[in-house]
Image 1 (cartoon, rainbow, N blue to C red):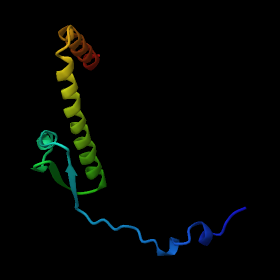
Image 2 (image 1 turned 180 degrees about the horizontal axis):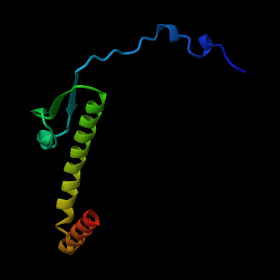
Image 3 (image 1 turned 45 degrees about the vertical axis):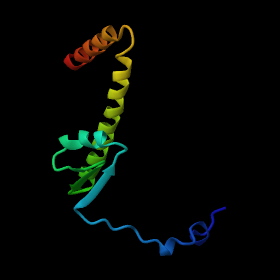
Amino acid sequence: MKLPQSECLPELDEFKPVQVTKPIGLDVSFLSREQAELCKTIPQANIRAKTVSYVAEGWEEADKFIKTTLSLANEFHVQKLVNMLSKLEGAGRVTFAWAENRINEWLS
């Protein structure tokens, strides 16, 4: 049985889509200043304490900015893990083997 639209979504007529104007201003806030500082490699990014601001000309550029900041934040945590693991016995051999595998992947 199919319900009438008014019963499925009674407030549909009141729905108004969000109108986003361009350029699109974005702010990404991190837990630490160090994470935000990693974003200084992003052209035109403005860093204030733990927040990185950016003005994108469109949706695609805004999406790339968000994905880049998230990737850099993840790299911050990966580096912390690597630093912790480097203190374990045999870490040098593992690190060398990992780096050698990465280089071989890039060159293949």
